Amino acid sequence: MPHSDLLPSLLYKINENQLALEAAIMELSNWVEQRGSTDIADNVRVALDAIDKNEEFIKLTLAVLMTPN
Image (cartoon, rainbow, N blue to C red; front, side):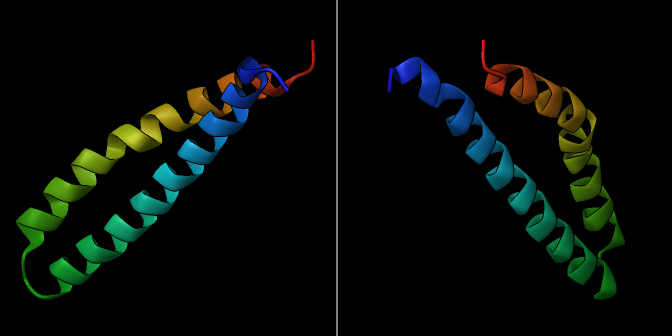
């Protein structure tokens, strides 16, 4: 298998890791908010918005990369 064939799979796995980290960080921000630090929780959620905003583009690009020629 050429190395170029590995790139889409690698990017897919990196994206999966990113989404898992987003979920874990969101759980932590909820926990922080429940303990009274709403400002910190809001800041975390704002930072996580970038992942949400880019998710659709990443999915579409990975679909194109994984489509056989």
